[in-house]
Length: 72
Image (cartoon, rainbow, N blue to C red; front, side, top):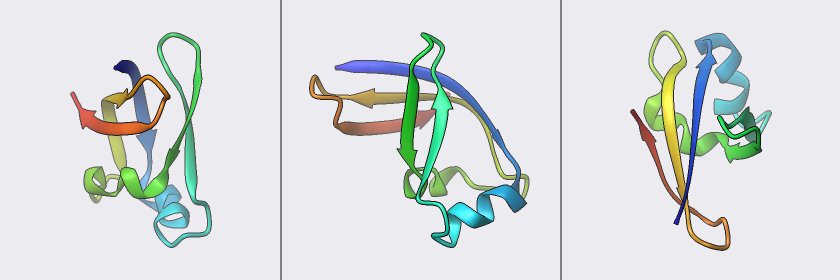
């Protein structure tokens, strides 16, 4: 398994475009310098009135297929 750590700070208003389907993915920079493209739908469980804010860990398999996204 591969683990990618990153911080995310997206306001509620900014996330509305993703939530409504206008933009389907969020691109983040992992701590190791890699750019990760995450489907916006994977972030919906973490959406609050403040937006999506926090530190996250993305877990993928050896072929970089999504397994799990966790807020740390």
